[in-house]
Amino acid sequence: MPGFIAVLLREMLILRRRFLRQLAGMSVSPLLYIIAFGYAMGGEARFDGHSYLEFLIPGLIAMSSMTQSFAIATDINVARFYWHIFEEFQAAPIRDLAYVAGETLAGMIRALLSIGVVLLLSFLFGAPPHCGPLLWLAALLNAFVFASLAVAMAMLVKSHADQSLLTTFIITPMAFLGGTFFPLDRLPEWAQRALSFLPLTHASAAIRAAAFGETPAASHFIILALAGVLAFALALSVVKKARD
Amino acid sequence: MIRIENLTKKFGKTQALAGIDLHVGQGELFAYLGPNGAGKTTTIRILTGLTRIGSGLALLGGHDIAREATAAKRQCGLAPQQINLDNELTVAENLDIHGRLFSMSRAERRRRIDELLAYIELSDRPRSLVKHLSGGLKRRLLIARALMHEPKILFLDEPTVGLDPAIRRRIWALIKKVRRDGATIFLTTHYIEEAEFLADRVAFIDRGRIVAVDTPAVLMAAVGEWAVDRVDENGMTSAYFPDRDSAQSSVSAGGGGFTLRRVNLEDAFLARTGKKMVVDGQNGRGGH
Image (cartoon, rainbow over all chains, first blue to last red; front, top):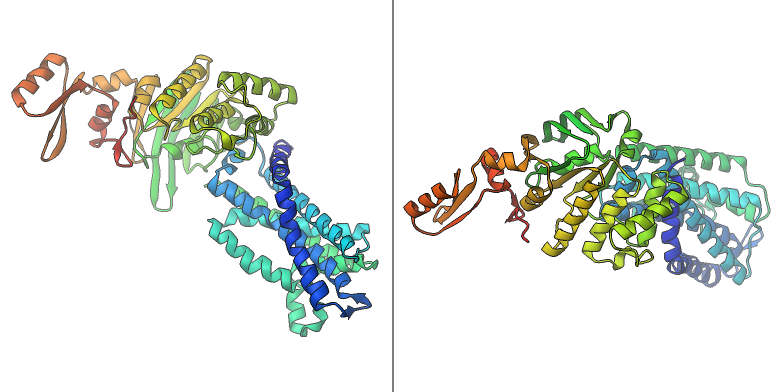
């Protein structure tokens, strides 16, 4: 697909230049959550026979893969409104699919890096999860959902300020309520139902089950895959409309 | 090479283009001259696929930009008004990514990068990050990037805006070189001298309409050959004369402060539209 490699390569070259900064940035939040919640607050607490730290690590994998894949929205936004680099892609004889796929994969690669950071921290803090293929599948599907959503949102917003609002009102609440830090079965029935609409809830549940060496419910993967396809289709549609 | 018929575009209630008809021949350097907000950039954005067409027809090398966008875009290179190079990439990486977007092979990209860096006298800096280049070098690189895939048509949107006169001259020399090498060039500008110095033909655009298209010489001759500017309490007025003698006679008769000069494209624009090409509080003369 002409253009796909160009879009992806551009993002990878920039990632390489910012690598250490990016890596440091990806490490700060998980490290703080592990210290503050995993040790200081949840030290003796146990969930389904696991320490709170063991419970927390899969949630952090889900959260980091979400926030880091969604973070490409800010880069696309800056490239579009501030540097006008998006116009270079618009003027090229490439399909919108190449652009969306290139940016989405770039977001997923960032998410993979952030997962690597959380896994490294989990080893350092003595709570490594079971890293089977189902954990990676759930994490990748989660990254696919939020990277696609990031491309779509970056095209829909009209300014950097709007982009920041999206993160504040969508990503941050989801990060805390999507089964990352506490088991959702402690919430009232209606809240559990409402939160089951969040893709992150399914990502956390699937990653946690896989991390504990169990087989996650297939419904989590199906819902994540459907959400990913919908977000990707939305991204394609809004990229087409961005020509004005 | 470029054929535009009854091209229109509306943004909300604003009629940006109100039925443009133009034809630009192969190898021609065509200047599109008008004040800010006249519709220059909208035209170029439509022709390069950045903005959707309202109605009408735009053919590039025989390909309809609305229906055969990919084929039409292959014909074109664009150096936009705002420098949109990747600051975090090197000079060579910027060219390489562009080449990949146009499906150039690795060997083609390497050859072309070497050629273009020599062309814009940047052969010694392929690995410099773009953010470390001066404004003039960035502008040259922007034009080189537009030429990377050897387009038949080069669109230059205000290629020297914001540059000092010496650097502007260097960009003009580069544009002339590109033209000598056979490309068709469509240039938008609000700098009168730029159009006078570079263009084979000029179109005046005002409020989304073409008001005149011809060679600079013909457009200016329609006004006269010499101009006398007078400044009084009502502002500056200009009078036009077919020869220097009659202009000087007018000066002798009128007395007071005056400037005697040759007619330029701004006079031709003024005569056609009744207004000067005021640009951000300055007139459109770019200076030398």
